[in-house]
Length: 363
Image (cartoon, rainbow, N blue to C red; front, side):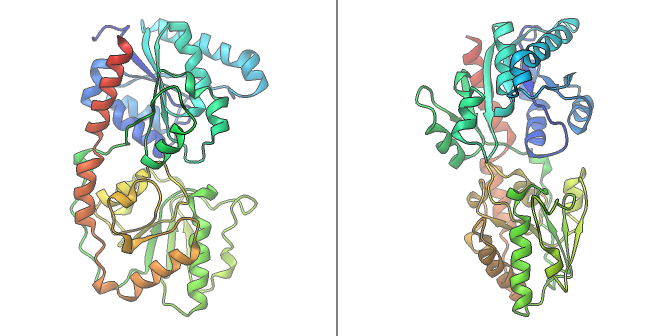
């Protein structure tokens, strides 16, 4: 099984630290994946190949074409595949399975699978993916398909009648958990907001909610710190000028996420949609109280009292007002949440399911 021909080649274009990349990295470095000699194919530079180097995971770096563009389909995808084949050959690697980390890698993965006569697998991750995307990236031609979240898996299965789409949750390591933080005696004056400048991460819903609460005279934290750069108002207008008493700070790209989270007494996840929602899981694993939208798997680990409806500033405002107003009596359920995560969302479970899938493909 350790022969170079028994290699799983994972394809992941973007390499900055984000959900898809961190979840993939947890798989790549898992003890149970070693028998498959995992290799990462990615764009040059960035967080992901650097992490692979730390853990001794082989990396092939190559500029990715825009696979759906006219130039990509005419020649760019073929050139990309030839360059990758050449680089793999130099290392004596011949993949037996090609695994695309999301649908955007679909066309390139099929090209490489055809060249090597390899098995093909794909994770479905993007919450905004449509049936049209599923068809355009030829996801249905993959031999093994899995989605990382329950609701999204059910939605994707509605697009696919020829095969079963498996459910393989993203996972976290048992050693990533920290003891729950002792709850502060007073409501926090500084709150962390997770996500990114993308509009579907819901930052504008939070600032709308803060505007509503300011208008009602609610006593609010002095500062909200966002894990990313300030969005371009042309694409995601937070309308910050409306907030007269609150300072919104943008922290830029965050690498030491758990260490950052641990410096706060409250975190808000306002995302409008997630397939899994790893950031929320990581916050709870770090032992920090979380308010979250009902997105991804979070309803499986947190009680309804501290959840709000996605894409609904009024719902967010109600929950935040209630939490701040009766802070001393609020049970954020971090202990119970950590127990639920350990029961359902450890990376070991994902690796066991992948191992079984790879064995089937190898046959």
